[in-house]
Image 1 (cartoon, rainbow, N blue to C red):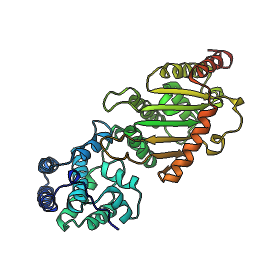
Image 2: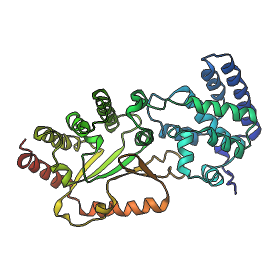
Image 3: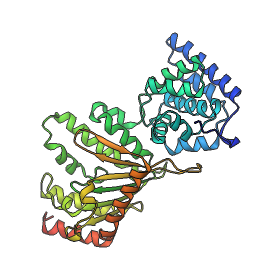
Image 4: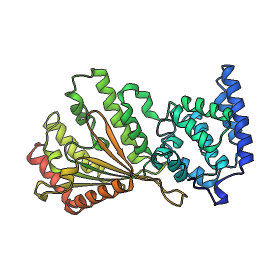
Length: 356
């Protein structure tokens, strides 16, 4: 059953939105046939006249993944949201229920953080009651939104299943990560990152260097100004500090880097010592919990649990899955050393194990 909007400040009249978006569809199709590269700019200009709600605008800013967003993506975001709100007058939850998918998937499609397949776009347009012209234009626009962030410059260095995570990571307001094997990518030094990829015989030296650069580029979000840098809370198993990657000097440099980054006001690094005993993280394995900003929304976007494997990753967003990992995090939080004790242990390992 459709969930209709009752709040007048989050939608426009159906007639107004339909007429304006239909006009935009005609313009973009005409310009595309003519081969003009100005099509995106023309449609953006047309859509900019719409009375988009403050709530919608705040969502776009909150989920922005940086300055690399393209004009085509801006148009897709505006058109998708305005079609849902203006023509169908339907909430995100209502649309997700009607399309038999998660709210998170709908959010990723509308914000450009996930792929907008032609099949998804057509189903959305059919549900929203969009005209054939508008359906065709939105489908074409979805195919144009290929560049969504800085990471696309690295091409095949980022697999498709990880590309989504990089976008979600950039949009998150808080990241909670547990690592039981390696130092998290956001905290790795260049030497350590190279050591991690050194054993991958299937990649060339050039590809290996691109992988390292992607990992280092991601770290910029910890000190960005706009949008505000996310809170990054990390629990590391002591074993990840003892395991030598590359050589002793690389490890000493890496552990000193952990102490330095831990001084940032938005970063906490805590160690789960080997003497902590059995904990739920031992069964759950490494994971990241991503929470997203509320902005001016009544409720924030649903959190995501990210679990990575050798060939892919799981993106979990059901309430019961989030509750389960919240419980695991609570277990880790209770058993981990505090920040001061963690710094002491890191320094001890540098001196006694890696002889830095």
